[in-house]
Length: 424
Image (cartoon, rainbow, N blue to C red; front, side):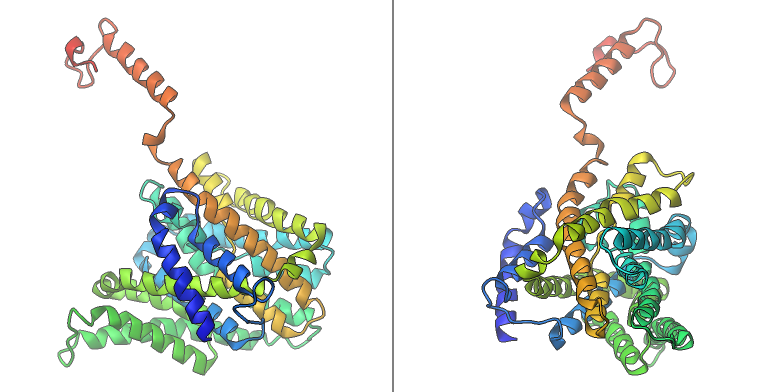
């Protein structure tokens, strides 16, 4: 544990020193931590020793996903969701199940998995994570509706995919007792905890009995998040739905708390995400990649370039999205922490195909992190009009000049011909 902390601190310092370069180029902080974990892990240097059943692995992945969902939910309030739900609704209502089914078909016919395992891996890889497309989601030049779509979709689909994972895992294990009622109770309990805890906490803050100082205001949301996490653990509720519901509730009823916590919360979530990536990379021994085989690599590529693009193309027919917006949404379906957590759940389940499923999931996640986190800046810049090619700018400028010089051409305000001296 001490060596892990030391390695993380060193890689974090390196990432901070290279952060400005990463924002300007395709260099990705996520890839840096993933590569560092791979090099430091048992498969290469053996500096960091972790195994799939190590408690630190599941705990870090779970905490990272909880923090990500909590901060994602806090970016939008209930009013925001109601006013702009049409596009995320298409992505979740049609895109999620279609992605699951297309991925399952690829897994069955390409990777050779049975149908229960194929559907299971489809459920594991159907959630998306905007963390590895941060330059796209956080860029004001990108249309707001596209950023909202990717943010809401990724925040909700993690929890929506979980029931499918649990049920299909039971089917793959040959269990006939699926306990659907128990799963439903966990989901409802998660939402209830996520709504009630922040609502009560913020209401208490506004009574005459309490007053929160400006210094401690950011910690209010931290306390709410920790309480939601603890209650979710104790009650066995769905932690991830609880996290997202809590974030949305804070954003809805506690605008002041949301603004105070926003920057602080994103830093906390970023730390959890990066350490989880480092640990995940340490699990990826070279022998894991050696055992993938050509069919596994073909599956991973098709899962990224075919499954989601095809599903979202169907989902967004006649949606009003521009071709560029739709292409960006189709491409940016990166696999991240939810898939990591669900893959570890399968690995610990002991089903016959557990190692094969985990290997395919791990390879797909690694490929996704490398491809998506290295192309987000490129695609985001495509939405910036000032980055028009020089030849195109000259052509457009010449066209405007000719229009202004045309005889009898009205000025833009309709007052008459333009003045030649005003032409650039």
